[in-house]
Image (cartoon, rainbow, N blue to C red; front, side):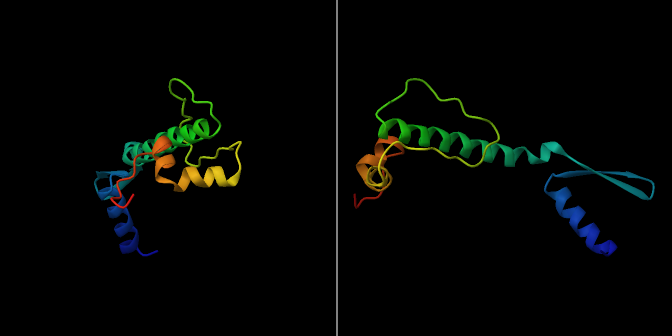
Length: 113
């Protein structure tokens, strides 16, 4: 890589808040700033909690075991998998029928429903 290309990449990382730069004479010292990843961690955490709760709601509704209280969410997991004790038609109905979808996910805002 050329010096200009390295400088360009470091500038992008610095502008994004992912690295810090310290100048000492003619030298520049770059270091990773762990706090620069906070917005990304917060974004992932929001969706992790959101989908964890919604999928648990779907599981409880379909299996008729509506739980009380909140379900603990494992931190730092992006992929969510659940196994539903139901046939495909029942699961599909809860994913596509607006009335069933509103029970576990949200009320549709589409005026055509």
